[in-house]
Image 1: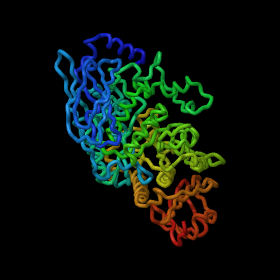
Image 2 (image 1 turned 90 degrees about the horizontal axis):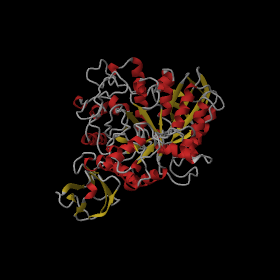
Image 3 (image 1 turned 135 degrees about the horizontal axis):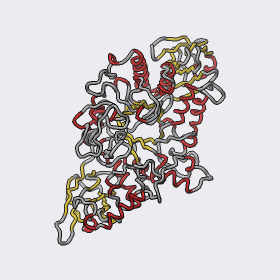
Image 4 (image 1 turned 90 degrees about the vertical axis):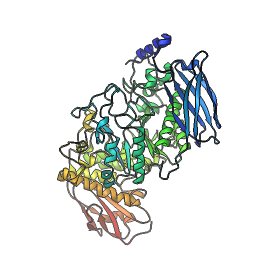
Length: 623
């Protein structure tokens, strides 16, 4: 829909008077409840109802003060500024909306006590191994919510790429044993907020609600249960957020508080996707505006984050989910397209309320400085601190592809991987970056290496031994494949997740010998990493690649692990005296995968297209 048509519709509705937007006199209050004891005492409520702005607001509760009532262009809205002091006690109180000659409206507002249970809101670090799940395609644990009466999209067809398949939160809960056995410590689940769009709603990136789990995935209570169950297992949960846009069926778009709730254009204008204009010293302002204010897609209105009510609404909804569910981290979708000042403000607000909480942004950009530009610390003289702790590390992603497929040279092949990591000096802390081989938007890595299992395992070894937070995409451990053309091809169902599936890849008997080979490879290395801090927080030392051989070490005061990557098409012999600075008097290396002990006295033979992960043994040197 073109934005000018949308704005015209809003204008016409505003002119219709009493017939406008036919809704209950008090349609909703968001957030519907809050907590006592929050560090930030300020709270802004969004009130939506038929001509609610014509009413006078009253509330009386000890420790709660109504500071200001804001009216906006749309008479169906009020924004209430409240202060919840440190003396306020948990409890409920009425908020009344009065108008002479009519019956008063009332909403029972509740302040809840904060949950002080242990292991809540832990943060996600390089100690974790993240597993990314698209819930609609992972497992169907509750067939009763496959199609929900009253929702716009009622399609359910597993034979198509764009319709819903029925996976849900219960399906994830049902397979936590599988994930924990694999060595996973953290779940990153693609957005699960309600996407009540007429079509293509399965992916979750066009939310129509900010405080409600999509009914086809489950309920708010079930989502909280998933987090609680994970915490009891020693696992964590990351929530996927979209600041930049919403679905065009979002209730705040269908009845916008004011035309400037979204970015206005004379006609539909899509973002240019050109991150370069944000730091280009010669960039035109028009190019910058189109990058950040253009719409991501026709059905995804671009939110105007310079509007203070928009800012408050987004930020409060995120704080609400942390407090409600006890989340451990956020992944921030389309980070580069947001208003930079707002995102810094948002980051400060989250860190202030939850100092241990962590978040990382999607920075799908080309170039190391481009990526560093978005990270916290003002390390490339951006002029202010973005507050963004880490990013999805696309630069190491491009580099590992080149390492596996490129021809070794001065700048090519595995040299690119070395050079990319050599540029880590630009980050405040590169270990907060999330490293990956694929995700829901990218071609499956197994397909990118032409289904070469040796290359695939070599890349997996790198992923689980390099610096940063490793992230796996669902099904990568069982050789799920395909190129992202279109996206749906890399979002296929995990076989065995649906009742009646002919095979069950969640079990060893349901997997092929080759699938079990890779599954066991991932499990062995991931669990070693889980049990050995050296691969989590150990220092990294790398050597300049030679003849297609890349050698690096992870080490701490207790252990040293040597990683030898042979990207050549033939077996290579590595002369070891070059690495004496790190190897010292170690004379043996135990292969983490097969437990074989190898001699490291002089030379080491490395099979073609193989990465060896060796825990060094014998006389340990001082670190």
